[in-house]
Image (cartoon, rainbow, N blue to C red; front, top):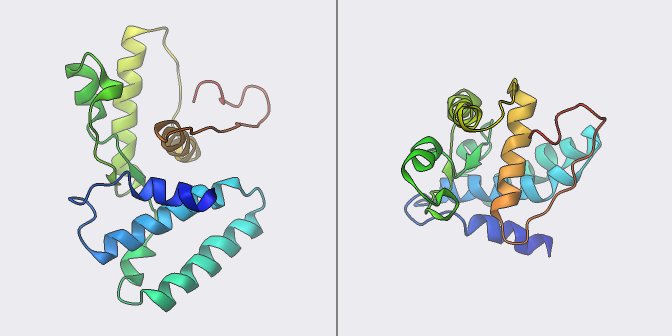
Length: 165
């Protein structure tokens, strides 16, 4: 079941985006991290998976792609054009999107700030501060919601922003 989730995530990307081995190995690493690492609670377990297991696998089996695939941060999503889609479309949830490497968090922040501003203009304003941890959680939640039969259980103390995210 978990392995199928990795491949389901890989299949979100089009052949126009994943057009060489470097990008495919980077996408595979992202999907493994989202499926397996996001379930882990202990930092030692996360380090073991991402820095030892995945790094060793990539360096052993894909040495030519290792430098590109192991570059951090690893941020994939399908919402680069979210602002335009929300403005132009009657059914933004149904519009085709491109699942791609979004680069750095500094490139993702303006996109999500724009979507938050648009939400606040139409609905009861949410005064959220999108710090890096919140952005990372948003990326995870967005990926889960976009997948077929995607589900997650958000756990934390009251007032930590689970419902707002």
